[in-house]
Image (tube, rainbow, N blue to C red):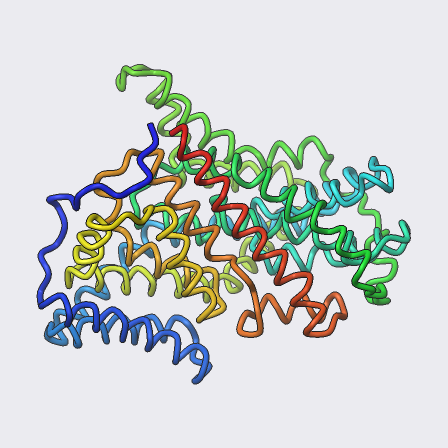
Length: 459
């Protein structure tokens, strides 16, 4: 059943600590502090979110000690709930890269594709590599292959590269175990298995449109292939795991989490042994933990104990900043919740004709445009809109997660580190980057919302 509009606010919402006007001012100033610190002062988002959270409490009239307590409570809860999963995902992604498994996936799929099918194959590669890896890591990993494929096929670098970037970006914004979707799932109390299934359903058509189809714009944007990494993508590693083993390792946590979702849907008896087993195995912490342990043998078996140990150890420093941002976002979210700002938002939306999914997407878009960070957009929008889930079904809450995720990747521009990363790797001008990468991100975001709204008609 489709419920596009938010119902009346739930009875479990926090009582506002001040007048509506003062709380709205507190929220706006809190978000304003975050935006100004990130854009103007170039402050790390962790510090910006911390400052924004304390601003919300103080402006709302809460004493400093209470404001700090709210922030630290949210910080700790998020670090415990999401931080472990991010760390496990980083470990798995590093094993995949260091073992040569990622190269095996790329070479196998690209090697079996005709020239006409190459953009489609690159979209598949981007999606598969993007499933366990962060966008920046996946981009760095794929660039030598994008160069090589474009050079050998004689096709535009944009035509080959855009589909791969679409696959990477869609996974980053829509599909767990990436930090953004995981954080939104945690804040909105969505079911991870359901969100994963719906996220894949939204991501597939979205990647097709924003990837291979939009990639045809490469015919009109002439970008010569840089001569970086020549020969690097041709290297063969005798120690690479096979394609079948690599794919099985990548999909293992996805299968486990999907199994839990299917068991919850089709097995009504909560005491059924099969359902209980699948519920345990499909718990995100257990599923990702199992995947890392299995990958140590399937992907890291030929790396030796020392190689596996070094790979796992080196995976964590790179995600320290993301962990802090996500946890600080949890503190900001808790500040919004404890002051009752979320209650005000829920009540106002309940009296309007605004679709909660469109609202979620729009709020994420605004924060994304202001801060340039998809992660900051996701954690801030999720925290602000968490009270709106009170009267939504599990499926609708999952769609809300996806709407926020889609909004978080809207129009990457000059305040986004990813914009400059793509610009430099592709050797494009700012204008060309806006016409290709930024336009692709916008199309990805809008298509994501369209398919989320379409699913809402049947859920």
